[in-house]
Every structure is written in structure tokens, then in C-alpha cells.
Length: 109
Image (cartoon, rainbow, N blue to C red; front, side):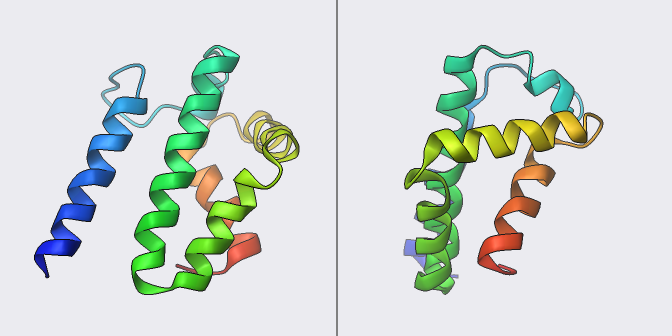
């Protein structure tokens, strides 16, 4: 593993820790996530899609761009899709739902 890759992984963990609002003993469920304020959820989405896009682009630039564009080109529409899906699957983790939505449009990464 190169030092650049290790640095990027450390950066991703730092970004994700900055976007977290609570500490959970287990992964929070979608129903818990939806209880956060609109502003908290928006910051979470921005951090998560930026971080996942960076990590994926290390191995596949096209997929990384797909992930960034998936959310950032039309955040309001994607936020509606995300939150409708979270309501549909209230017992799944938020992260699992987001990754499933990304894989649907951007492929396996």
C-alpha cells in the first residue's frame, strides 16, 4: 500500500468522523438517520458522496466521477430518492442503502 493511498484513507476516515452526529454501538438504522435535522442530513450526504467518490476514483476515475455526479449534479432530486428509499427500508443501515443506490447507477466498486 502506497503512502499516498494510506494518506487518502486517513483523510476519508477524518471526513466521515466530522460528519457523524452521534456515536452508536451498532450501525444506525435508516429510521434513526431520518430523525436528524435537514441540515445534518445534507452535511452527511455531502461528506459521504465526496469521500466515496474520492476513494473509488483511486481505482476507477470514471466510477469516481459517476459517484460525485450522482449526488452533486442534482442534490435535491437525489435527496428525495435517498430519503424515500430510507423510509422504505427503515431497518437497514443508512450506509447500506446509499451504497445500493450508487451501485445501481454507477456499478460495483
